[in-house]
Amino acid sequence: MSFATTAVAPPLSNALVGWAAMGAALVTWSGFSLSMRGIGASALSPSDVALLRFAVPALILLPLLPSRLRRLKAVRIGPALMIAFGAGLPFFALVAAGSHFTSAAHVSALVAGTAPLAVAILGRLFLGQRGASVPGLAVIVLGIALLVAGLGGLDARVLAGAALLLGASLLWGSYTLGMRLAGVTPMTCLMLVTYPSAIAIALLKAVGVFETHLGSVDPHQLLVFSAVQGIGTGLVSTLVYAVAVRHLGALRCATMGALAPVLVTGAAIPLLGEQPTPLTLVGVVAVALGVTLANGRRATGAGFAPAAR
Image (cartoon, rainbow, N blue to C red):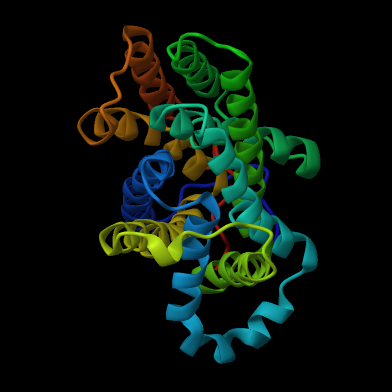
């Protein structure tokens, strides 16, 4: 299975499934960004949250694993690594480190917001693919720049955090493209993300590389992070995003993901007490406009094509 240089619009039924799945992904991504910023206010360490993020879905999916082993072994190593690294523990580690220096809105803006650009660049460099809406991507990039400028006080720590989050965006772009190259079902994709990272973080915790506070954490905090990270992000968002990419194409889904900062900026006001600056609000509007422009093209793949059935 390979990308098509010029994508065609998917059938209406497939498109509706894809849009519904993408909407669900946006909501769960917002919860992910907010919870990553919330780690600092909790008794959990970032590695504790990583363990919940990957171990909870790993345990839930365990009864299904034996029947999927043959399909997992059949995935080519390149796309499998793009999926496992792009949305797995390395991605989580970059986001956790970057979020320590920035706000929830900027975690979302610099990861999901720049993902369309990452997908377009990686697709062009490594796969020779075209099809991105240049005006739409340009407005999205402008909006992200305004969001970053809205942070204020861009010292070395903030810039370091932004660089880490942009690195996470590149990993996410490789994950999105990896799903298209692998041509796997959403469930197989979910397991490729979950099990390598669950095993890795469990081993690292077991040998004492990372500290743990799980034994002294308020049960309520444990349940909240297990629900948001383990079930919301670990299961729901990974599964529905794979469904969306399967039906809509890689670049279109990455472009729609740029709307996540809009949701997070609004939610962070009551939940985390983060007040957006006027410049940040202008950036949010620009991102939303860029997404509209990028998805206004008749050729749905502005985005590398939906999977052939």
